[in-house]
Image (tube, rainbow, N blue to C red):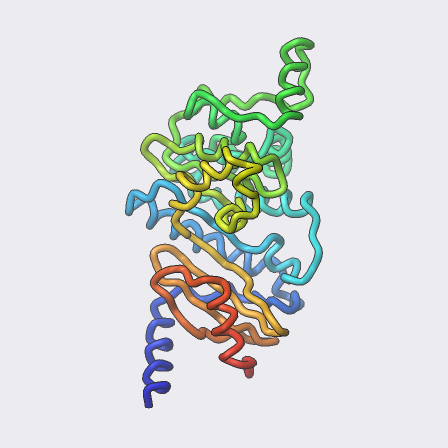
Length: 306
């Protein structure tokens, strides 16, 4: 009887929650579903950003698997693929917000080369409404300083001496309107650690900063040892730990079972078990559950029967 009551509560809660993106599958990319999960996340992300702005959230994260809908959680991907995918997803998904905010939406890319690629791959007036910049340049404008990776610092010095640049054209961030929303495209993950330090400096004075696939879980989990990276550790303590989960879709897997931890702000967290053809909501949480607790719930639930 108690188990039946718990099941009814889960079903009732599910009716008011955002469902998993259609076509999502941890095991395979089925014919006809390619790109559907990623496309479905776009309006979800915009809705979460709107809710966060309404609630005066200052820092939010959007995190989901690279190449969602193109690769499974078990496929190998390289960093170039991931960079390209995150760039394209942000340019396409944030276009409606750019239409609303114009230049007061800043898209901050890891470096100037990625910024140039964004302009080349996404031409047209609709995509030119947002202010396109880099983490470093945005940090300079919004905070008055930035951290540079060793290679970038060397190239910047050569740029000053020789009058030429291998970094790409400097964006005109200084003349852009003050941002209401800054969306950082894949900050830090796969790039220099200084990206995360610059990300902190990209906080608008009266707006929302959003990290898209910036691997905050890696930072919170202590991937970079504090004794070796003290400056980054301090940044995590005062900045990253305060990030609100706007959209998080994280794969959970163990012993042949797979599932998803999913959250859309301001909703509760949801844990799904993934079957070969369907998924099943197992549990909801008011706060983010530990990964090991998700695994335990997933294994206890048994296989999903489609």
